[in-house]
Length: 384
Image 1 (tube, rainbow, N blue to C red):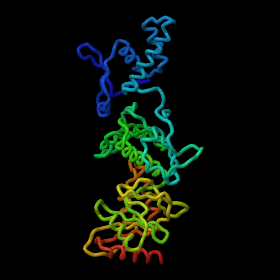
Image 2 (tube, rainbow, N blue to C red; image 1 turned 180 degrees about the vertical axis):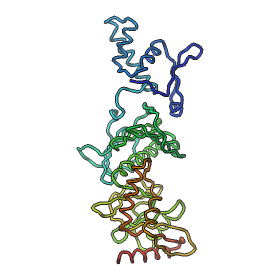
Image 3 (cartoon, one colour; image 1 turned 30 degrees about the vertical axis):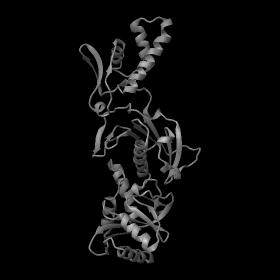
Image 4 (tube, rainbow, N blue to C red; image 1 turned 180 degrees about the horizontal axis):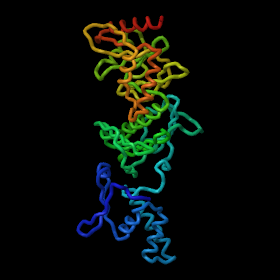
């Protein structure tokens, strides 16, 4: 066990308290009123010690007899557990040793995820990806009610209105500012384990926030495996997936609907697509995350192309140079580029994909003619 560096021992009107500051205040940790034994234990934790060592030091300090040890051990163990739950003391177990009961195993884009925690807190949107296996998962995601007990003062590497990401050595700490209940995710850098901490009560808000937090962990591992996610809609045409991407409000869903109405093409995903390479061929993988469209697919399809949408008074396509194709697609990614290594992996994946698919810009209206103009361009590409 060791002290949380964001707690300090102070006296308030001669009464000792362990009080949070800095990150512990941001994490809503509470202060603790201490007695003489609590102060003694805190002082001993100036250097890390096991619970057995702390109990032995207390026994020596208070001159406990052998017959006193069972009760002393029980009382001190309960008190130390309370210190850990409050966040003031960090447990002696490694963070990755903690597990919740397994709920279900998923297979998404060839990656197996073991979800741990109460089954009812996970979204039903995962059910089409349920997978039975006796093997070890690629990633374990553990969900715990409470506050993350680990407060490692890491290096802030990203901050926006949605999240902050801290580099804490062998893991990232992701703080989710916009959420009501899912506030922290601890993500091991090799992608093998993620621990998500949530606030009660359990209900629909928690289920939705947890659904999207699992996405963040999954996309991290997918990035390590050479896959990237792009904000886009996708349709199936001539046995291949075709993506329409653009800034919010640019008409991605409208254009996919025009294709469905004009040519009967099915919609694969209404908001987000995961791209990768299989045997040298660009593909998209079915994923459960699809925005408000509620339309997603479980299958993997060859990727035909990516259309970048731009509003215009008429409908026409323009060609892009190779560097523009790579740059514009890379700018539409929502994959994590928290570090130079992650950024370079994403860019390398986009470069490989861009070399063998159609990437062009469609200047368009919201009229059905826009779908016809784009179809003509795709048909020319397919004919070679």
